[in-house]
Length: 324
Image (tube, rainbow, N blue to C red):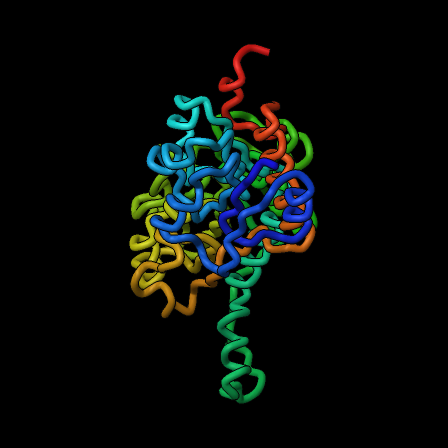
């Protein structure tokens, strides 16, 4: 029976499917494997189901000499050297589609939480410091009728924008390509990044991490935003220059930020944790029962296909299979 590695426990639905086909080697610890542990664990397995916390590079691929592919339990795949995998003719897959709504909902959760100062006021209640209602307490930002700016109008960015309909928000989006769905459904306008930053009351980031998007939101970009505007990031941490964001939040350059991802996870930039105008979630954008079960099943199906020598349904580098 073929043997596969699962680098960290995933929902049981995915594990059950894998166990029906393979001997499963599972990291039972509730933590990512160390580099040394990962290099040892990938030896003598026929496939690897990895997570975004695993750096899959040439060294790991060389150690995984028997592996017939890497199935990433995530939509993003910046943790994998895709070019190196392609050079080695190793298929790589991700889990698109199944966490779109969950992540879009998280963006809205952060948007409301930071605009209405929910975490800050919750802390006052829990600490017993609230002395009763007052007309100037915890005044936050309005949402209904305010302008939503979406950076990256792919699956998740589109879902975030479409969910704005109930709040009658004008929508701007910045993307390399027009999004006819948003333009038709919302009257959304495709604008430059600078125009979006200057006009939006809420800026929600939904781009993949690439060399071009690293620190896309830097001190200059933050300086273009309204002082009353809020930044929401559920994409990848390094898209935002976190140190610059801390300075902007301290200085009141923008009103607040809601973050689910960080530049150097699990660490945060110095000073971020102490800011009342930042809402900080621990990378839980896809953390719903349905989304995580479906991610596990999708990753498992990709790995089953890879080990069988078949085209993985969500293959990121289909050229490794040669012409159809």
